[in-house]
Image 1: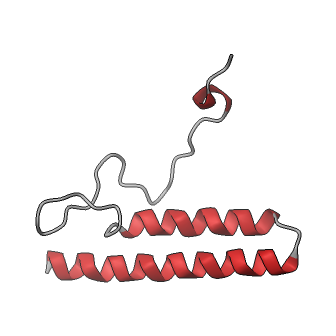
Image 2: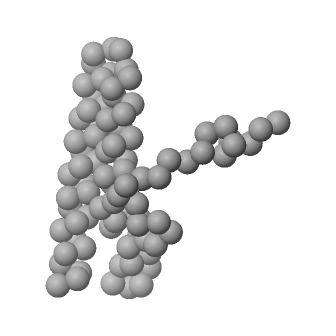
Length: 84
């Protein structure tokens, strides 16, 4: 039997920081504070929306993508404050 990684290799995300996650002030890594994580989720939601045929479902998925974009922007603002 072919493993999942052989059938469908993971795609390289252009926003990815690789294995390094954002580190919070308390030293704990957090993907939630990493804008690249949210940009990746937005891209995934948009990709899914583009292949959907039901107009309402498609609209909802695009709204979800917009929400992920807002989360990415908020995470970027938090990162900027942390690095200031």
